[in-house]
Length: 243
Image 1 (cartoon, rainbow, N blue to C red):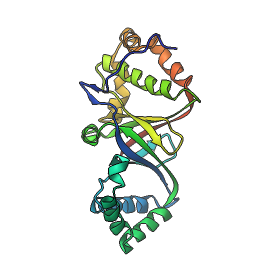
Image 2 (tube, one colour):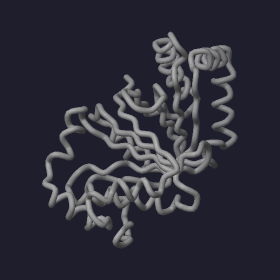
Image 3 (spheres, rainbow, N blue to C red):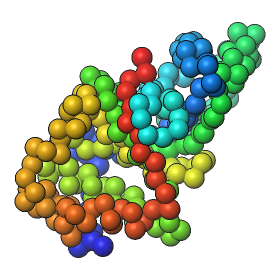
Image 4 (cartoon, one colour):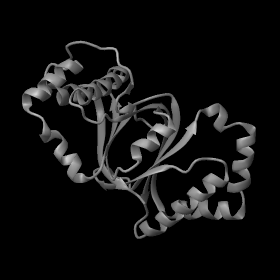
C-alpha cells in the first residue's frame, strides 16, 4: 500500500529512465554444448544487422538467475519506420542471401529456448550512454496481476524516485508494447558486482526510510511487499557484458 501518487518525470539528473523508443527484446538459451557456437553466430549476425540498415543490439550475458543465456535488445525506433518498404527491402536482400539464410539456420540449431517481445523505453542514445563503462546489470522482468499493470508500472517509477532521493542511479524502465507476457522490465546499470553489492549499504536505515516515504511508499520495508502484491510472477537476473 502506498501513501500517495506523485507526478514523475523520466528525465532527471541521471538521464532519461523511460520513453517511447521501440525495442525488440530477445532472450536466448544456448543448446547444450553449443554455447560458444551461439556466441560466434550472434556476433556474425550483428554485422548482418548493420549491413541490413539496422543497429546491432545491446546484449547482456546471464550470470545467475533466469534461464536465458543472452538478452539482446535490438533498437527499432518505431514500427512504421522499421517496417517501411525501403528498410524491408534492404533487410530482405541481406537476410535472404545464402549467407543470411545459413546464419539464421546456425542460430536456430545452437538455440534451445527463445523468447521475444517488443517494449518502449529510453531513446537509443541514452541507452547506449547507460551501457558505457558498465559491466554488471540487474535485470528484472515483471508480469502483473490482472488489472494491476498500470499500478505495477507506477511502482517501478516510485522505486526510481526512491533511488533518486538517495542520489543513486535509477533503473531504466521498459514497458511492453506487444509480445510475450511481461508487462515491464527494469535494468540497473553498475560498474561491477562489487559496486552493485555495496550500493545499498551506503545509507542508514533512517535515510532509506525517508527516501521511501518521499517516493510514496509507507516505509522502506514496504517497498518489496507492495511490489509483490501487484505481481503474478517476476524473474530476477544478474548479468554481465556479453562481449
